[in-house]
Image (cartoon, rainbow, N blue to C red):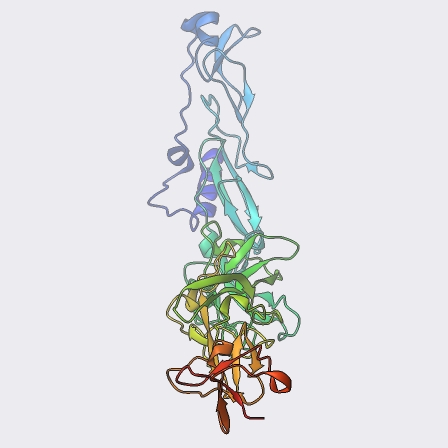
Length: 433
């Protein structure tokens, strides 16, 4: 009678954890089998039978003691369960395997984890806390063979927490809060209450000024944003376009984590072409943040009969006039050859600006060689038209009161003319004395 009452009480305490219709009793639930031990087995046969052993003093074959089990020809072994568990009763004799019923207690702050066969705190998983209505709970199982399923979702819930995002570059705003919430209903948000998105950049704005998630300068910004990394580390948690890297998940974001922005100076190429559109040279990887100037060595661009005035932007920048010695112009927002992808991971610029020369005509009274204005000899001049270049001293001619040279002077009137200058018709002439 005592045994029956004990079992009844035990089953009553189990209801609510496993439904009664699924678990009519622990013997059925655990699959307990009690051995049949007969003296007719003899000593050898008895000892070879699971759940039985030969009792020498009584010269009889008996069941192994309650709370013990015995497999095949082995010895009696005490039943065991997980750490901090205890057997539910000791009424079962003749156990053939370690299936003795046990129970353990999970506190309100804990859930049952079958993986570790123990009660664990909800806070042991990043971003979770115990539900407010939890009570102490008894967990039942069967020896080392059968454990209840996890009740994590019933006992624990996700809570939003903050990850701080530091700009990582002097002169930008204070850190901003990225809210993170684990679980299928969570994600990333700029607010503690959501809405939640799968990628950080979908609704969280970067620190300003003039910054966006993607890898390009915006406005006057001179840096390319690469993403956020753990401090003192190159490990990326958020990419430059606001997404998670392939090897990162939301579970990698821990409460009170602080991530720092990683930046790359932005580079672009500057090509210089002559008046025929031929590229003479290219300055590669000009830095958007630098104070470099346009090329002042322009000998390859000298054109006789013209004077170099300034550079003009043929392609890729908005400035139409760039004076020698001034700062390099910045690329236009859309220069048709890659501004939106101006930075790449390998520091290889995809944007190229083209600059070409602008000239002024050689002024009247001068001939121009090697980018220098040379005055015509006294009494001579040049004219400037759309078809003249004034590229040589031969472009200088006599004007005004002239005497034509028809024969040689003699005596005191002899003149030695070292440079006879032709007029526009090619006649040699000099000033009348």
